[in-house]
Image (cartoon, rainbow, N blue to C red; front, side, top):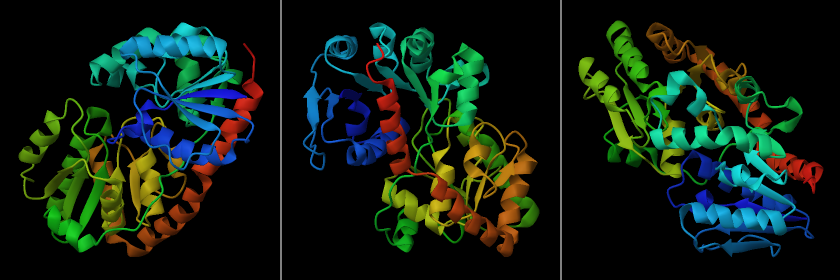
Length: 369
């Protein structure tokens, strides 16, 4: 079998969520691919492919923008038995080929509550391409049952065409010295941790409100650490900090590297992730993997990922978020029980399992065009 994979996002030094998914997934996929398969990593610039087996090849297509995708369409027609489009709908849209396997990470662009507050360019592109791309593709991969249900509801996709392959959790190297990281970001004492891109659907505004009420009502002396790059429509986050008088209590370290992130998660009293919508919800698993209690939302895919190993709160209710956090902070036995359950829950997810499921999916989809 000859497979092409859009690998561009995975070689980005500052990988966002989708790029991380592709990178981690392919790190395990390369271990399970039969030696007689040829796998082309399609990119727009060279990169160090050390660690890939001999049947994985770099294919550099130096054409800019849309022309890159159109050249790949030609390759899909004449060269490949399967094409993995894990971060873009463009090639499936133009190819009209069942060889294409497309990944849907989330459907935020199509949910009115969030699409108006999302990246406008991304929303425009996805709305223009998605329906036809889904129709053309041989298979559609989703990371959660919630996303699968949304896909079928919004686009009328045949359920048999949709493959549920849940994501894994990133590998963790040696952690850094927590005291040094806390000193670097001026974090004194205990803290609650949140990590993600700062955008409206992540619900940071209500998290800050809940934190403000928690400090006032329970006189908790710890901090709230909000890590992540600024995305879009984030001004209300900083307004809420000023409104609640929390300028010295909420710390924004910005975008941080994985090792710093995992070090800070490990040292937190809890990881709080009250997102309003997620296609999957990786930070929930990251908190569990690092052995801290998790507080997350009771909607979208998050209960599916969390199982019974997290406190589930109403993300639209500040009091619910506040009380969920306080339950963890005030009840040590309850918090430890959550950690124990989290250790078991995270075992259900893994990139190795996802890689094996992808291999089987490609076998069933082979040469259907």
